[in-house]
Length: 386
Ligand SMILES: [Zn+2]
Ligand SMILES: [Zn+2]
Image (cartoon, rainbow, N blue to C red):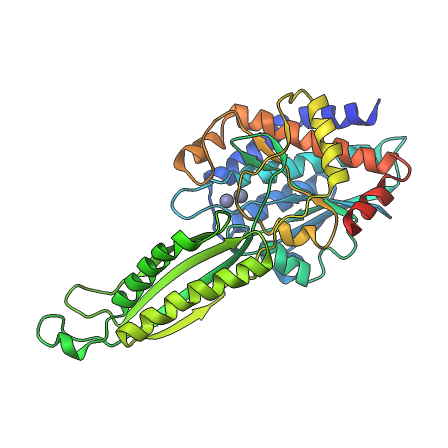
């Protein structure tokens, strides 16, 4: 059987099992680095399917690596499985897990076939994409050292192979003031909530002078304990984003000035820290992206767009500076946008499942192209160096 047909058949045969995995992950939304149920479910499944599985890979509790075969090239498909607080799988990472596993199963069938090409397969389980930077920790721990290229797919309202993703720096801000009776001795207090509110409004004013591609958004996570106590502590979480590291540094300096000036105005102390590593922009590998595009169009997704900007950030950006990578977006049969309750619902429908399996086949077919075409791996590496 033709290798691409073999992949499609394998994935179709496993459709129900794959839907089960995705549904289980969806039903049990878990946050950054706490994806214990998903980690257990996915690693047990992969082990049963004959992969060599390393749980808590490189010491990150909810990361995993599953491999099959040996030698080079070593192709890597990536699973994500973290959710968002309160609104569940509103980014559809259950589908990213499903797609990674599906593509892996298909490629394993290829490597086991009588006319198997040379090479090996890695399925990487990467936790904490939503602001935690799990992939950046994996990179630091050497997880991508023997990988030749990496790919993942992400659900979205639209089918786009190469969408722009900007750099992202998370900031945690804590103001410390002094508690006092808010009615009897308010002059004895130093109001930390006032500092947070001032910083919030200063940043809102700053937006008029921000470039259209910059984004700053935050929440107040602690605004005091009780109305009759002057708040002695206030805390905020912010994300700042820009297309380049130099723009991000400039924006960070402007935003930091807002946080510090609010502290000065109120007499509070301020502490600003970066709770996770900065996400890099995504450097799409043009050669890989075009292969994926041709494969998914061949699979019947006729309105796939090669390049369009949908916005957002991902820690896959950091991977894309380490090894040749792609991060295509795929539509899931709903016009809803990510990080909404409506998207959470859309991420567990039969339409979403069907679209996920097509995207998984396109990833596996792209890997087959690379494994079976002379000179293609070199071309991908040349594109990467450029
Ligand atoms: Zn998201
Ligand atoms: Zn996401």
